[in-house]
Length: 328
Ligand SMILES: O=C(O)CCC(=O)N[C@@H](CCC(=O)O)C(=O)O
Ligand SMILES: [Zn+2]
Picture 1 (cartoon, rainbow, N blue to C red):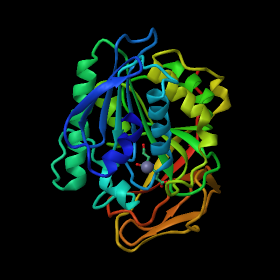
Picture 2: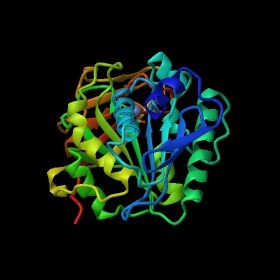
Picture 3: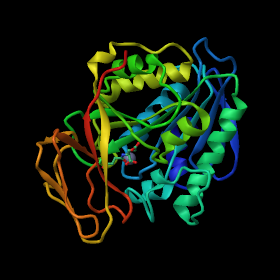
């Protein structure tokens, strides 16, 4: 059953609440794309884990990776040892292989959200599910990994986006993520209302967006490159201590500036296929916007991450980032 849960969710065949046994515990399907795993006995290092994928429908590798973990659990290759909420974010967008249907789901995770429609309704459903899950497992430390892939290539194909919030990051997170072969870390400089930000800001969880390569259709992903990440997810599911490595293996950046599209008449002044973390020298013009005017790199070089000139007006068209110090 677990191994088919993703296909059943995408076929729209899991609307009724269902439950059953897994190796080391039980599962409950709370609704389409929302699966809770509850261990009989939490492991010594168990956290209350939220593992999400498909918040953007065209980002398939993380869905395949989670499917692989569930298949291993069902086959008895791993034994459940931590309460885990597994989420498939934007089901209709996954079915259509699109980033989103009407609006970007990953900008809607705020409790005062007023919008109506498919993605806002889904954001509300996921926020309520996360709230209830963390409340049910209140005695455990909270963790949320929101798994994504990026639209374009990257100088660092696998990287961490660290949401801005008050909660300090536990140093072990950097050691785990280094061992999972993440290559870079990007610290956000302001609230961003993404799903991982929601868990960090409202629940003080250890929470990150993890970019795990480039967005490709189902069946075209290189899951071998994600094997270390798969081992981290298995350790979390089993409630045991994950492998650790030296955080200095990763390169650290912070957001210096967020480029916002202010006008229909907006262009980025570099080729569309420019890889994430490409560096631009002082004086380089990066964007033209009929309302905001041009944006030019100032005295220090800037690297560009997530450039996208097609975003909605008022949305982020790129992050401009600069090196930052590694954690102590
Ligand atoms: O490749 C891109 O341009 C976008 C990849 C993506 O979906 N990234 C996330 C990052 C979330 C964050 O900023 O924390 C997003 O844009 O939602
Ligand atoms: Zn994404």
